[in-house]
Length: 217
Image (cartoon, rainbow, N blue to C red; front, side):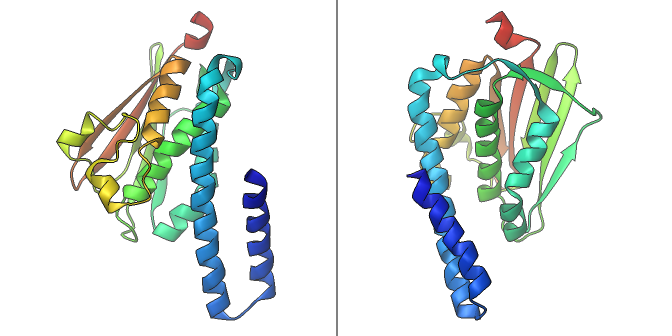
C-alpha cells in the first residue's frame, strides 16, 4: 500500500511541472492533500500492527532529542506553511541525548505535532512551541499549541483507543488512534507522556525521559 502512495506523490509532482493552468494546479493540490491524509492513516495502521511484536522491533540507542524535534518540524514544514502556524524551538541546550528508540519516538512526537497543527487556529499566525529542559536526571520535551483545547470531561480519555471526543466531531477525519498509539509507545519505551489543556487557549503534551531508562529495563 505504501508503493501506490509514493507513486501518486510522484505523479502529482510531475503534474505540477507539466501543467501551468490554475484549475489543474488546484485539482492536483486537492489530490495531494487526500494522498497525504491516506499516508498518515496508513502509518497509524502499520505502527498499530507493529505493536504486536514491539519487543522484536525496538532498539535502545542514544537519541539527540533536539535533532529529532528539528527533523519532525522540517518534515511538517508544508503543513506549518499551509496553516500559517509557526514552530518555535526553545532550549538553552545545544545537544541533549535520551535513551530511546529513534524510530518509535519519532512516530510518537510526529503524531503529537500533527495533532497540534490540526487543532490549532488555522491561518491565525499562531505558534507551536517546543520546549526542551534538562533537570538532574530527567529531560522534558513540552509541545504547546495555541489551539481550540480539549474540554475537561474529554481530557482523561484522550489516550483511550478510538476515542475522538468533541474535537473529533469538529475534525471528522480523526481516528482516535493517534494519541492511543503515542501512549502505548511511550509507555513501552519506559518514558512518560502527559497532557494538559484549556479550552480556547491550547494544549501542552509533555514527554518525560529518565537517564538510561531503556538500558535499565
